[in-house]
Amino acid sequence: MTLIYIIGFYTAANAQLSKLAANYFNNGEYEKAAPLYKKLYIENNYNDMYFVYYYKSLMFDERYEEAIDAIKDQLKTKPDKIYLLVHEGYLYEKLNKPEKANKLYEKAIRKIGSNKIQIIKLANAFKEYSYYDYAKKAYEAGVEKVDDNILFLMYLGEIYALQNDYNNMIDYYIAYLKKSDNKYSGQNIKSKLSKSLSRDKMTLLRNKLVENIQENPDNISMIDVLSWVYLQLGEYEKARRQIIAIDRRFGENGSRVFKFAQDAYKAEQYATAAKSYQYIIENKRRNNPYLMQSIRRYLNITSEILVKDTATTHEDFLDIEKQYNKFIEDYGIGDQTADLVIELAKLEAFNLHNIDKGINTLKDLIKRNYINKNYRAKAKIVLGDLYMLKGEIWESSLLYSQVDKDFKEGELGELARYKNAKLYYYNGDFEWAQIIFDILKPATSKLISNDAIESSVFITEAIGEDSVTAPLQMYAKSELLIYQNKFDKAISTLDSINFLFPKNNLEDDIWYLKAHIFKKQKRYELAKKMYEQIIEKYPDELRADNAIFELAELYENAFGDVNSAKVLYEKLFLDYDSSTLAVEARKKYRQLSGENVQ
Image (cartoon, rainbow, N blue to C red; front, side, top):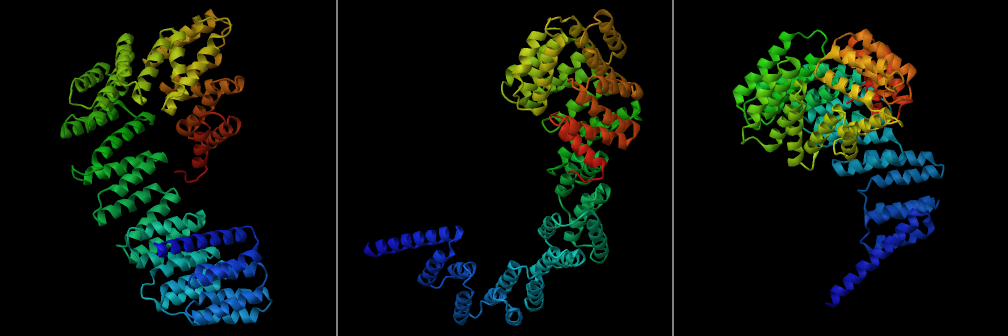
């Protein structure tokens, strides 16, 4: 018991002394820290860590001779600590004796053996004082003298990067990849390259990788880094080909391709993402963990592409409908395919304009009690949308209310609540709609929250202080007509607002709705005119930032005028920096400027 007590007391005293020394050192009181670290060094079996702080305390206190003597004494007992020669040499530099210093550096290099740790410590000592040429010599000795020398190739690349010698840096990184072909090698190099290469240097790296891969076609690490370089350069199709080549050559399970497809989609490279998912669909077995997700995402993206493409025909939608039905038939209706069924119903109703067919598709899914309740709830919400499209408003409200009741918490319930609030709004019950919108302001979903805030603000501003609701009732009716694709009636109703209520405050909102109609009708010049009027006459109103963003998209996608789109995106994130669209506008601007944004 006595012995344990003594050991405990000694340990506590040692820790207290170490803490006191550290406080002195960190506060710059080196003259006080030095004797404490010397005492700790001696009392702890000449511990290297305490010795480092001891001689550094002497050095920072400018007691260079004492520090040199301390290092010399240490080397007498531990001659293998050749990194101390570097610190000794640095002290001679402080004493303006560079000749002595250089002799010590060269001596350290000559004394390098085959011990990997010894070489790493020596190189680190040189790097500490930015003596990169000597650090290179240490690593080069490591390449020559150590059997397991792969890491030294990477370290040499790092040194050349510090010296901005990118040509040699790339050569050594590629040499490392050649010798260390495992699943972590490429990741190591990618993390280092991302910090040091500009676009033109990335191009140099790409060219050298292509050249070396021709000689080493089975090196997965080099192919992996090359695909990453293509991504940095925005060359998504080339990246896709490389990533698929890796998957094929090494019999992978598609995880790499799936991850790439997700990244391509985020970067709005929709066609490339779709082709990546298609590869998984066509090349992986039914039990593959990425297959069903790839099927869903492939069909969703393909549908998105068709909707956005101004040249899409009815036959194109019929073709994608066949693909949906084929996958559902192949895999049956269950939790795995429920999302596909829901998307198929939307396609049938909104794109093929067969509302009843879409309704029947969803009803068939909902009645299957073995389907997960979340999927059935999603189907009910979409079914409510289709009934609203058909004009059966109260059927919609009933379905939304059922989901709201079953999902009091979470996004499904919030979405159902929001949809019901919109129904009240369309029906002219603005007070009740606004109550729900206000409840949804802190919604879990950022999209629902933003829409609820915007809707609530719009109702307040549109009704105004005189509480006249008739113009807003007509406006809300027009929104519903647009949703139902009854565009002529919607325009007629919007025009009637100005005729019947010439002093209404909805002019910019009316133009905004008309712009949406004209876009759906592909009458892009008219849509452009509406947006321009909002931006010019109502720059401080609620619709201004939306109008700028949507006009920019129009220039980008419909007119192919990238420069005009860039001007508008820039205007949005500079002049409307508090807008919820500002971040997306900045991202779009950078993409159109040729930057790689992921």
